[in-house]
Amino acid sequence: MSTNDIDHLKHEAAARAVEYVQNGMKVGLGSGSTSEAFINLLGARVRGGLDIIGVPTSERTAQLARSLGIALGNLNDLAPLDLDVDGADESDHNLDLIKGGGGALLREKIVAASAKKMIVMIHGPKLVEKMGAFPLPIEVLEFGHAETARRISAVIKSLGYGDVPLVLRKKGDAVYKTDSNNVIYDAAFGPVISETAKLANALSCVPGVVEHGLYIGIATTLIVARPEGIEVIE
Ligand code: 5RP
Image 1 (spheres, protein in one colour):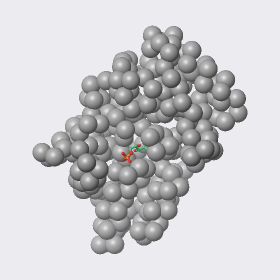
Image 2 (cartoon, rainbow, N blue to C red; image 1 turned 180 degrees about the vertical axis):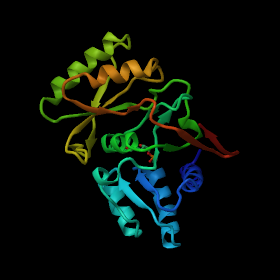
Image 3 (cartoon, protein in one colour; image 1 turned 180 degrees about the horizontal axis):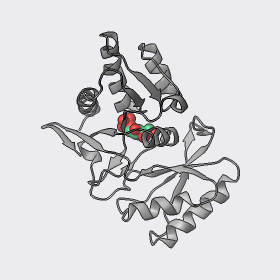
């Protein structure tokens, strides 16, 4: 699939997602290119008179939404949200997800967990039998991060996955920093993740892990865009 084809599918998924937004809603705004397609379409509806308030999941999303005239508010004041709309890096058929390819997994998960519904937009190849071909992002406090990574590796090994490479995310030559000033390790499992909840809980228990990109039981609606059409899984 060419980049143009993928961009087209992302746009199609976003166009279906924007139909879920109704007047007066409080809406979580995801991060990443599919979310940006959604926010652009939402901006057009706002300019057409739709009255909503958004809660952004990253500084980049906040900047884009503001530039389009979408009113933004604070999660503390607005939770519970009516809807959260976001992309994902992978989904399985239970609607469990891997997110965080764009580095916004922490705020994205807080916002998604605070919404009554989470709509996830993906294109076909991201729907998989077993997750893990996309490396799992794990956000870690910078303090002692190499030691935290060693503990993460040990926990992963104890669950039977063997020696899974953990790669400290970089931006150019520098260590990548999230909006919350943490670092990210990407865990290259390969497409073998089973018992996702067990892995998610084990990672959450490692001191120094701030959040990981496994979203278990949070998504309520998956919009899958393929060249032959849109599938909605609920
Ligand atoms: C950012 C995310 C994104 O939703 C995910 O990486 C998908 O991005 P894209 O829509 O660009 O493919 O989790 O943290």
